[in-house]
Length: 404
Ligand code: TRP
Ligand code: SF4
Image 1 (cartoon, protein in one colour):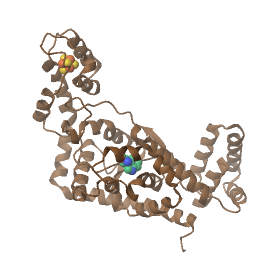
Image 2 (image 1 turned 120 degrees about the horizontal axis):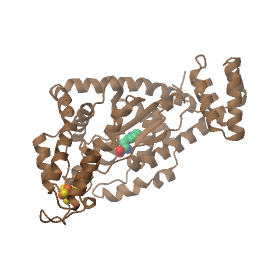
Image 3 (image 1 turned 90 degrees about the horizontal axis):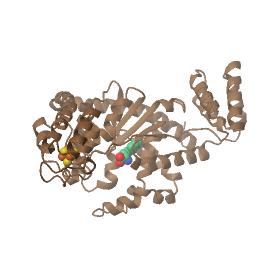
Image 4 (image 1 turned 60 degrees about the horizontal axis):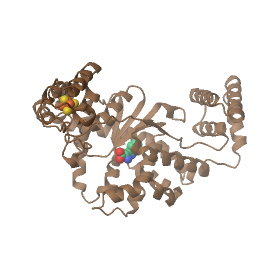
C-alpha cells in the first residue's frame, strides 16, 4: 500500500446509533453503497467514538452496532464489495491514537469547532475529558491507519479531515526525515530502471520548478506501477517529489457528500431525539400513516387555500424522492389549490415505500440470522487488522520503537 493507492481507497465511519432513518440514508449511506463499486472501501462502526461522548451509557453500544449494520446490509453494502468492521475489534486504533497524540498540539484540538459546540450542545454530560478533547486524533487515526486518500463525509466533518491532514503532515515532517534523505532518494530513483527514472526525474522537475500538478500526478502514478521498490524507497520517492522527507502517512481528502435536506415529520431536522423520523425499512402502512400526519404549509388551512411548497416539509421530501413531473404537479397544484395535501402526499408515500421494499427484503435474512451479521463484522475486522498492522509496523519503525 502506497500513497498512490491511497487515491483509490475510501474510508468512512459512523457512530453506532442504532436503527437508521431515511435522512441518514440519503445523507451518507446511499453514497457509501455507490462508492463500494468505485473504490476500495472500508466502512466501520465508530464505537470508540461513541464512548467519547456517551461513556455513561455503554450498554447500548453493541445492540446499536448490530441494528445499524443490518441497515447497512439492507441498503446494499456487501461484504464482497467493501470491508465492514468495528473499530474496537481493531485494537491497533488505540495504539496509533496514542502515538499520534504524542505529536498533536493541544491548541489544534481546542480550535476544532465541534469541540466547544458539542460541549455546549450536550451540556447534560461531562465532556471536560481527555478522551473527548482527543476525539479528532481518534478520527485522524481511523483515516491514516488505512492510508485512505478519500473520506466521504458531510460538511460538519470537514474540519476533522483538515486536522487529519495537519497531523499527517506533522508526523511526516518529524519522522520522515532521515540523515541522508537526498542520497537515499537518488539511490532509489536509480533502482527504477532507466526509463522510469527519466520519467520520474522530469516530472519531479516540472512539479518543483513550475508547480505542475499534472506532473506530480504522473509521477505518483508511475511510482504506483513500480514492482520492485521496497516500501521504504517508495515512501522516499513520494516524499522526494515534494522535496520534504518520506511520506509515511499520506494526507487524505474530503469527498464531500452533498447532504439533501430531508426534514422530519414535524418539519424540524430529522433526528431520533426529536422523535420525528421515518425509519429505514419501516412497514409500508406505518410510512403511510407517518406521511399523512406530516406537517404541511400552515397557510393551507382549508382545501382551497393556496400554499407555498417552499414552506412545506412534504415538498422537501418530494425534492428527494420525486421526478420532475411529479414535483411540478405538486408545486403547481399546491400554489393554485388544485390538489389537496393528501393528494400531494400519495405519490410520496409510494416513492418512499418503493425505495424501501428491497431494504426490507434484504434485511430479513440478516435479522433472522444475527450470527451472519456478526461473522461479516468479524471477517471485516480481521481484514482491516491486516492493513492496520502494516501501518503500525511502519509507524513504530519511524518513531523508533520497532525492536526488530
Ligand atoms: N466522526 C464521525 C461522525 O461523528 C464518524 C467517524 C469517526 C468518521 N471516524 C471517522 C468518519 C473517520 C469518517 C472517517 O459522524
Ligand atoms: Fe405541502 Fe403538498 Fe400540501 Fe402544498 S399541497 S402544503 S406541498 S403537502
